[in-house]
Length: 248
Image (cartoon, rainbow, N blue to C red; front, top):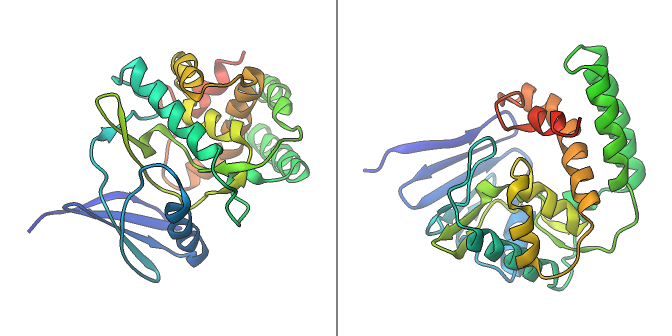
């Protein structure tokens, strides 16, 4: 019998691995519904759904290894990063899904969240005021009109699997839906700015790099509190706080 591996666990959801099967337990049934729907629609390799009985979703493991991890150097080749860019473009070119995703939040909502989180970070002494102010200025560039595309919504590099230079699977689709393409590209390259050029080459079209950098600041400012409250460390080397410091 294979051991049970706890992949991630916090108060909102948990993922367990038993052999080649992942069991995802989510307190929010809507997130699992989104994930099942998105994997069926996405024109890129995804896990296979084995069964779905709320609040649990069972899916297969995808072959290969994760492209990398936030806070760690990626050993993947430039060609693998470019292949990921091409896969992201294929997703963004697909027909729009029916739901609005995490990458589709409106400008007013984001601005309000940003104001609240920046105030909390400074008032509670979590981050220096000048660091927050500078990144708040950078982040504003992301608050602009955009054309909706099919987005993953949580496209961390740990969610993209490769075998050599080939993309073998993209996992964790619970935040998928209509949204801003540059949100996906920014999430994917967060903390790995040195690979942005390879990703854009694979993506195959001009993108506004200033907006991607703005999303790095915006996303990092918004998640510092959540990460700390859910057992993650945004101050770890190469992670969100270092991303914010790199904008100074």
